[in-house]
Structures are given as C-alpha cells and as structure tokens.
Image (cartoon, rainbow, N blue to C red; front, side, top):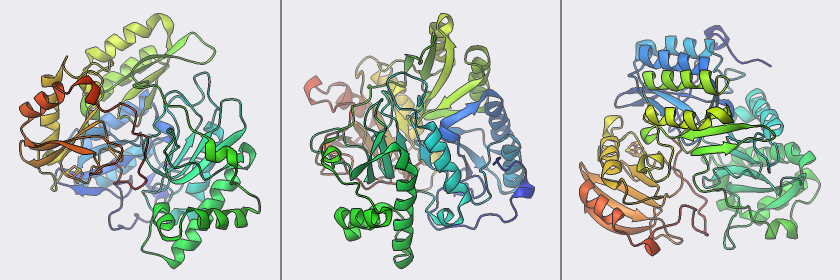
Length: 472
Ligand code: SF4
C-alpha cells in the first residue's frame, strides 16, 4: 500500500476533535498561527524530504520547525490561507499517511537505531505491519490521536521513559519473546510496575490487535475515556489481563514477565558517535538548540546528510537528529560539522539535553518566554552542570515532555520559574521543589551549585508513573 500523495486522496478534511493533537490534516491553532504535525515513520526522513519541509515551512509557516518527543516534526505559524497548499506540498513529498483517516493513529515508536546496531532484536518488520493495520483498519481509526504504542527491541539507545498505551519490549536480543505492558513503560528498576505478561514474537501482532479490540469494546461503553490508562484505572490490571487472555485464548501472565526488567539505555546515547551493525559505519547524533530548527538550518543538515549519510536523517524522541551510515573516516568530521551548524553533540553542553515548549512565543497559556529563557539559561550553565537534562515549561501541562526530567523549570510569571528536581515519589509530577519563583540567573545558580550527590540521575527514578501529559 502506498502513501497518500495528493489532496485528491483526502476527500474530507478531518473533523476537529476537542483536545486533539495536531496532525497533517487538522492543524491546531496556537498564538503564532496553526501547527501542522508531520508524522514520520520511525523518525526517518530523506534529505530530499527535509528540503521539502524546509521549503514548506518557509513558504507556508512562520519558519519555526520543531522536533517533537515522538520523533515527529511540526511546522508552526501556518496561516489559514496556506493550510491547503502546505498539506499538498507535504503529501507530494511522500509524507502523508496510508489513508486519509490514518494520520491520527500512526503513533508507533521504535528506537532510532532499531535494526542498525548490534545487540538488539530488529522490531522494524513488526512495527511496520502494525503501522499499516492501524492506518487501514477502520475500527482502529477511532483511537485517540494521543494513543501510542512502543515496540522496543532492547536497543542501547531507546526512549523508555515516556508512557505509552501499549508497550512491547524484546526480552533479549536473541529471544523471540516480548514482555508487554499497558498504560506505562518497560520496567527498569526493582520497584517499577512489572510487565503484564510475555508472548512469543510470532504472536506479537495477534496480541496487540487483541489489546486494541479489548480497549475499543470497553471504550464503546465508556466513551468519555480515550486512553488505556483510563481503562486500567477503571477495572484494574488483573481484570484487564483476564479479558485479554480470554480473547486470545492463551495465557500471557507468567513468572518470567513478573521478574523481567529492561536493561537501562545508555545515558545520552543519541549524542556523538555510535557504531552500526556489521559495518565500518557510524551514527552521528546531535541536538539543535531546544529541539528547533529554522528552514535554513534544516536545509543545512539535509545537505550534510547528502554528503555524509547517504541522504538519510533520523529524528529522535530526544528532539535531536542522528545521521546514519556515516563512513568511519568521516564520522568525527560529521560531528564537527553538526556542531558548526549550532547543534550540540556532547552532554557537557547544556543545550545537548535542554528542552522547552514554545512558551509565550507561540502559546496563549504560557506564563513565560521559555525559548528565550532556555537559551539564556544554557549560556549561564555552560561548564557548571554537566549531564543535567533541563526542561523549561511555560505551564504545568508540560507539552514538551510526557515524563519528569532531572530538572524542570515551570514558569510562574514572565522571567520567573519554580525549579523541581526529579524524585521517586513526587510530591509534584515534576518531583520536589528546589526553589520557588526565581529568575533565570538565580535558577542557573541553584542548578549550577547543586552538590553532586543531590543531582537527579539522568536515568528516571525507579518508581514510574503511568499517567502522562499530552505529547508535543
Ligand atoms: S506546556 Fe503550557 S505553555 Fe507550554 S506549550 Fe503546552 S500549554 Fe503552552
């Protein structure tokens, strides 16, 4: 099945849904214009497509291109009269869904290095099959645009902090079995919620569709709910597992699943250089400031991809970019060229791990200019807070991150923030309060002067929440 390629293939504009995420056909209104989200299959993008997106953002938007925490791109500042030409340009670039109603539900995440580095199970065939079913089966097109599925091959570079409606995780690189869970993420610590069960890889697709069917049936009687976490909160894990096993006609619960823990990903593995499987090639990763690019910046990284990585780019859920297939001899130079473009490739650069929502530059709910303040804070923190991922958010909705980061600054009024440190047991969703209502200069001192032994780990705390704010 091929992707939609023209506006003729989109007979009806997708109706507005209250609180729905932006998409390709349904742009969300913001202070700076509409937001058009371009969903990428597993974050992959060709250099040609990157140039087309840059052109589209230049022509039809306000020139701001954001990387989201689901490894998608979004074009901001779209005017009402340019929405249709923008959609047409993106469809012509091969960036559309398989069906007109498939855009909302194509939310399947895999590691950006799935299948290309040693030591992991290649989940791409399963994830592709799943993406196709979601987009083409009408019953699944009723799922919330926020409904998301993680298919994890156990890679050393993986985002396993974000909660998903459904997650599958390969038990080990050689094992043809997956651990599975709903309304959460793979457990990594002793106190984390265990997997719901495990299944042979040959039954993974049957399992996922059964979970979807169980949820859709329940949702029909509970239409106010939209996510699996609502169902789990209402009926509990055990009742859910029992319903699932009844539908599958086999058992998923077992001791292996209770005890299984995912190995922790490598901290900051998406930055710098990484070897590829069975070749002398490397992946080169770096972060654009606050996960944002302008059209010239995207054109420049696309040109670098044409020169260094066979014209391929990988967009990551850390809101960064990786270039795959870089010959070993060019690898260090490629990283230097990314840095010359303003990207940060080393974790000791605060901009390599700092994220922010649009703040008052683009959002009417923002209490602060998070983008400008983030750039100011990163300059003040240089050399003072290595390895400290910081998130600035314009309000408590936390659009830029569905999970708590080691340090979160929540705007209280223009120029002022509350600072939270991630903690195992709250009390806030961001952790514990470090300082209230401080300026950016004061925030830099608070963060920069944190004793080493009181700094939150880059890895998430052992106890994981399963709720979750909206995804950016
Ligand atoms: S977190 Fe709040 S301020 Fe930031 S984009 Fe979301 S709603 Fe707006």
